[in-house]
Length: 480
Ligand SMILES: Cc1cc2nc3c(=O)[nH]c(=O)nc-3n(C[C@H](O)[C@H](O)[C@H](O)COP(=O)(O)O)c2cc1C
Ligand SMILES: [Mn+2]
Image (cartoon, rainbow, N blue to C red; front, side, top):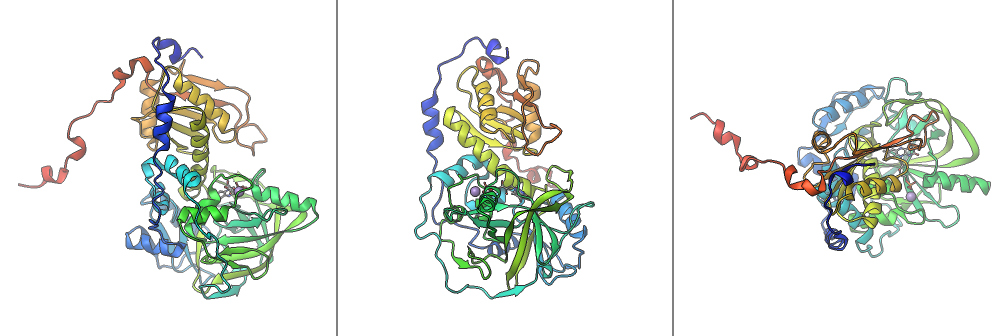
């Protein structure tokens, strides 16, 4: 613990107030600007117009091939991808649509370089939308009923036990209050009547299910595939148990979100949703689910999970199916968004100078960018992150404002050049992080202060070559 505090003898006064006011002043919710339109289809068309959508016309197999092509695209251009012909189904399959921070920022009309702060301002400070959830008596779209097996049944990783639905978010209502919740839960295809779903501990849907069970009742739910982009992001947002995630979706898109009634359960769903699987979780029933290639890059073994009885499937007549490669940027970014936003919010509430937070290159590493205010500030930030994020912040690195936290090379450069690793690293022993960890593989934490020594900050000013950023190379390389 004898780190920078010991090295830097001359601390200066703390300037909490000025920074706090400055950080809270940008309310960039830009009412009325909504470049993505209201529906996933409109957003897809916008990406197509911008050259951000690749299209595959050749027939692909839903077993491994579709996921393999998706991964190849994610590793090369990162563009969104539309498969027109998938064996065994009439539906086209869209993937990687939410696969970059720039796109998530575009959907929300916020600045990708100032993501956390603006996202938080949007969620907490933006005014609510008037009449946010109008209920339509008739859908604006042609809807048809179909069977579950008419949809693309996609098998992703080599040892997956069955096809899975990976992009579906569940809409359910709190059994007592009726407040709607949105959350993602992967689901294993068993038959046209049965899915088995991973409801991890503490998630709101899990709590609803447990509560309904205590009342001896099934829990009705609707699985939304291809809901409006704002609903997709709202589902990922960490908002309180009591809050209505459909209302948040309207707020995120800055306009009302029309709902229509389901046909088989008593729920209202966003009208533009491409496909809705309606059903109910059976009380006091758990059946084997898995194995499944998970977001950490390994397989989760077979284990007892929730049973969802399918009562009907309704889809738009020309529905586009949304598929997510588990563990790919499309999934991990959505998860990161919610974790980083939580940390940003909680740490800014107790400490000044918090500029941005990300979880890169994976959700178990929190990188936090600060403007140092006083000697020892960075260490307090590390402790605050540990206290504010018990589940995900396994390794934490704090850096100065001149570091690009979205570039892990730059973060590593800060560690290598600004950190006395023997003194600036704190190891917290014997503390759990990630919850599904029977062998305690994720116990213990590491916190790294990679900020410049406060009193000697001037010695750590990065060199730059004047004009380098503005050079037009073509002008120099063109043949005379
Ligand atoms: C694409 C995606 C897939 C996810 N899959 C699962 C899952 O299979 N099981 C689970 O419990 N959580 C899963 N999560 C996490 C939760 O859905 C997510 O944390 C959600 O915000 C929880 O909502 P809640 O706060 O209303 O409980 C997933 C998240 C994303 C973004
Ligand atoms: Mn919730």
